[in-house]
Length: 173
Ligand code: HEC
View 1 (cartoon, rainbow, N blue to C red):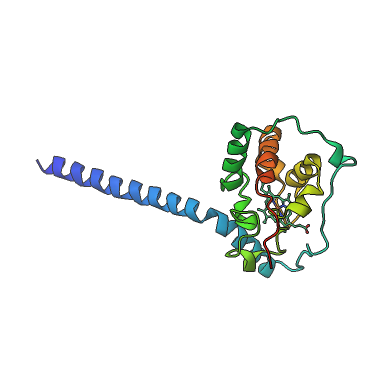
View 2: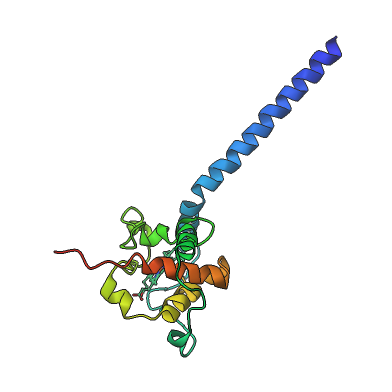
């Protein structure tokens, strides 16, 4: 009798520990996008000399803009692109560019550089799909992550197709 009570207590303790561990990891996930950013800030404060990202810019292959989009735009492709644009563990474009592409106001104070307004039709129509693809693929060191690390080539083309749908005429002043 005593033994089984003891075993029961042990089981109970194990259950409590397991759920605490599960809760901790859920919590970590919930914070992951913000912690990435915070960690960068922390390391900037702690490790001198501070890297200077302010002059960094696109480093695209020659003729990047000539690259043809192999994925025809379709409702399906746009839907996939949207999912990737929003998904924290994939594109996470929303973190900087916001849902509409005009910039995530909430995160702006934490960003090293103000994100380009990718909802601006004039600006976006001056770029070929190829150029947008390479910008998403390579990013800018310290400024915009290289999408090729977390998105397959095909996924990046879906994102290009989705980003095209964000371009709107500029709002009237
Ligand atoms: C950490 C913030 C950040 C994230 C995340 C991010 N971007 Fe950017 N993006 C920027 C900044 C800043 C610029 C402007 C860079 C510059 O031109 O100086 C930019 C520029 C761009 C441009 C080029 C616009 C132009 O006019 O040249 C495109 C297209 C773009 N981003 C798309 C995306 C997509 C799609 C994603 C997700 C896969 C993404 N970005 C993720 C910060 C970000």
